Amino acid sequence: AAVTVLSIPSVGVITTEDIAETSWGIIFLIGAMLSILDALETTGAIELVIDVLTRLIPFAALTDWQLVAVLVGLAVGIRVLFSTGSAAIVVTLPIVLELAAAFEINRLFLALTVLLVVGSTTILPFNTTAVLVSMDQGPLSNRDVAAFGLVTMGLAVAVAALSWLVYWPLVS
Image 1 (spheres, rainbow, N blue to C red):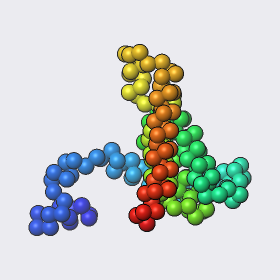
Image 2 (tube, rainbow, N blue to C red):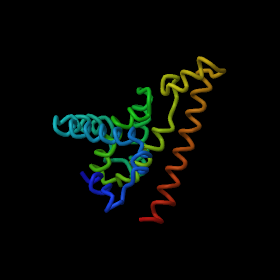
Image 3 (cartoon, rainbow, N blue to C red):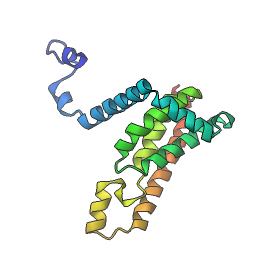
């Protein structure tokens, strides 16, 4: 409804070019994530997942940076199980953000960190279809794929750490 009102010619906030350039995949990704979160909350599954995780991992004994590291590590572990980063994010982000809220970690900062790290992680050949095609058509080996994925993941972790240490304190 808001898009409709904002795109009325007399209002003109949203133009046809804006709508044509919209990444609908991102909109559907966010919608799917919110739907999964709603289903997890409605069924009580999110509480069960958080309860199991808090029994396995002593979150309360961790400092904030250790807690963030563990949550990002969990996100990467879940990422490896999925063929695409977006599918992993849809499942991972609601869980990580609920845990962040429970332990009073800034959800915005953590969401950016998880998106950066999970989006840059490719360890196994099935983690992206492009890797499968390039392995079939080119000189990539499993070792090459893992090395590339670990380097990009390491760079994303460095960018995320710098954002927590430098960027977020400057803008908040």
